[in-house]
Amino acid sequence: MKAERSLAWRTTESGFDCKDGTRLFYRAWEPLAPRRDGPQRALVFLHRGHEHSGRIQPLVEQFGFAQDHAFAWDARGHGYSPGERGDAPSFEALVEDFDTFIRHIRDAHGFAEENILVVANSVGAVIAATWLHDYAPRVRGVIMAAAAFEIKLYVPLAKPALRFARRFKPELFVTSYIRPGMLTHSPQEAAAYAADPLIAKAISACVLLGLADTAQRIVHDAAAIDTPVLMLAAGKDFVVKEAPQQVFFDRLSSPLKRYVRLPDAFHALFYEQDTSVALHESRQFVEQCFQRAPWAPSHYLNADRDSHSARRYAAMQAGESCGALAKAWFGMQRVMLGTLGGVSDGMKIGLEHGFDSGASLDYVYRNQAGGRFIMGKTMDRGYLDAVGWRGIRLRKRQLQQMLGERIAAHTGDGPLRILDIAAGSGRYVLETVKRFQDKDIQVTLRDYTQHNMDQARVLAEQLQLRASVDFQLRDAFSPDSYRAAEGEYDIAIVSGLHELFSDNEPVCASLKGIFSVLRPGGYLIYTGQPWHPQLDMIALTLTSHRGTPWQMRPRPQAEMDGLVAYAGGRKIATRIGLEGIFTVSLAQKPAAPGAGG
Image (cartoon, rainbow, N blue to C red; front, side, top):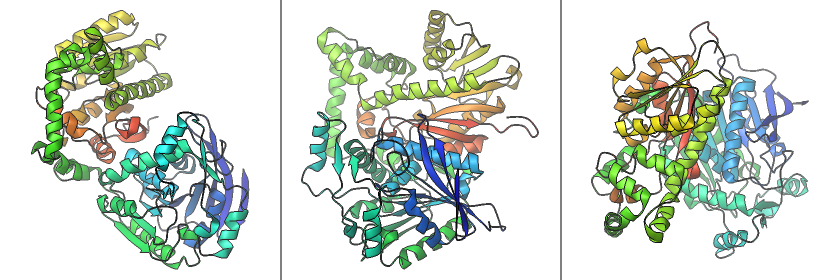
């Protein structure tokens, strides 16, 4: 670890490990005179695309919070971090890396999330916005400077051309057209940028297109974000468009939000000739954020009645969520489904049991197209390849991975006890337990329907498990389902259940029941559905297990985590699924005072 001194901070260099084992470089600024009037605070800086954390040193000093810590990373493919320059496995990988970085700061340096504030520029601002939406961290606030929600690609049809070209050259890179003088009015800053050997001149088409697609999703669903946000927009930006920044800001549900337009500024707002306004607004915002407490978990109890998602759901129920043409198109699809759907095995199960039923999910998990005649199998393959079902299968893999990690980490006397309160056929639990035949495990599978329990019993017999498996017909929302006399569980699972119910009261009831039978220090694995791109199509075409139109209210991740916290859990981690539609999260019940975790 390298250490330097700079004005009021001691600067160190270190690294942290990402989930795929890649070790990324970062810098930390430790105040020589830390604050004594409250908990330690941290500012975390995200550099622009092409740049690196070495460019953050002047910002730490100019922000001037000499009693606070600061951190900045080199994103993979940038600065001293490994990887092809300007490249990453995907844009989503950069967001996941950042979540890992924050958790490293939390665990290694001892900062609570609510004492962290993020400052992000350009592409870094989109990483931060996506992180807020998908992972719902309880950070105190985020400053977004010239957020790159839509990059100015001056070549006509540039994005379709890049998508087409990647079919033949997946490793395609795009060299930046931006010159230093287009970023700032300052000759000194432009010269420093031009002379910096660590600045990458190109970006991979994979990351560039992933950035564009993700930014469109985040702007569309910005109402799910309720973290305080300051947006600084450049009035003479040659790099990104301002309109999406304004739309994003307008849709935010943040109780504290400000939009400041700097009419004469170029893209590199914090490296301009005159940074006085940007720095003044930023300093003021930082202080305002730390003066107000984050939302209490109880805030989310009424989100099913008073929130953007609640209003969107009410419009769907009233038939006002889409226009007449869309209704006609989806109505035609519903008629076709009723007429021809029976030749597809998957659609037939959905029509009989409901498309959200355990039987449907078990068929989707198997992912083997079947049906009558060639047409039936072809239709079934298209059905199974729908974005929602692909997301469901990824959710299963993520849930199994998280469950496997918890099983492997378990120590202590006595058997490991696992409870699934709405197991369906129990496939994801039973298949995971099969890999731990050497461990003493007791599994309790519950479901509301006998059909699902019968399927689970057959699957358990087929897998020839050594584990003890108990099958219970119970209602996950009934307090009577959670009985102290039956003992405490080490791991509880609730997957794909809460997403089916818009009201928060039954969800809270089930969560409180779970935590009442979870041992202190035990874990809850829970899923979420923060958004879905096909809500109207599903509502107007498919039926639920109750025989009614399948109308969904996506529950933002912040709301879902808030309900878990209110019930008695502390979220540890979240994993994001395909296009951010589904999530799998891990929470822990606090250990008893004086007990080990």
